[in-house]
Image: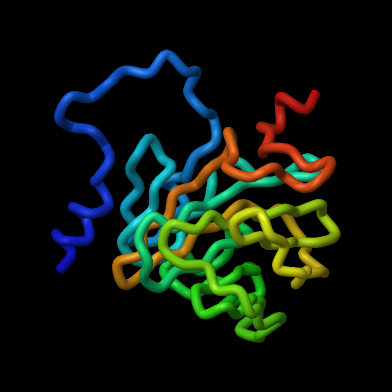
Amino acid sequence: MMFCCLRSCFNGLGFAGAQTSQKEPNPINLDTSHMGHEVVIVMNGLRACGQGCALTNVPLVQSKSYFEVKIRQDGVWAVGLATRTTDLNTSTGGNDAESWALNSTGIIRHNKEEVHKVQTLAQEGDIIGISFDHIELNFYVNGKPLEAPVMGIKGTVYPALYVDEGAILDLIPQEFAHTPPGGFEKIMVEQSLL
C-alpha cells in the first residue's frame, strides 16, 4: 500500500527525460525538519504525501500573505496554518490549540472544535488559496472565497499541509493559479522584508 502511494507521490518528477529549468529556485518549501514521521516530501520540497503534517521552512511574517495548495490526489487532507509546536503526526488539521485548518470534509477546525462548515468541498485537481493578515485566515477554492474567516490566531504560524489515505498535496508559494485577494502577496522570507 505504501509503495503505491509513494509511486503516485513521485509521479510527475520526470525521472525519465528530466528537463533542467533556468528558473531561480524558490526559497520557500516544506521543511523536512518539521514534518510528521510518516510524511514524504518530494518535488524540491513542494509535494507532501504519506501520513501526517508538514510545515514550511519560513513563517508568515508580512502583513498580508497568500499561498495556494493543489490537491494532486484526493484522500484525507487538510491545509491551513500551525505553529511549530503543533502535533505533526496527525493528519487532521485543527486538532490542537496550535493549528487552524480546512479539512477535506469541509470543516474548518481549531483546537478540535468546528469553527465553520463550508458548503464548497474541494476535490482532486482543485486549488485552495489561503490568505492571512494576522487578523483573519481565509480560504478560497479555485479563486472563490469560502466566506468562512478564522479569527484569533496567535503566535508565529507557518503554512501547514496534512495528508493521509493517499492524499497528495502540492504547495504553491508563487506563480499562483488564481489572483490573490487585493493587497495580498506571496510569502516573503523575513530578511527580504528589510
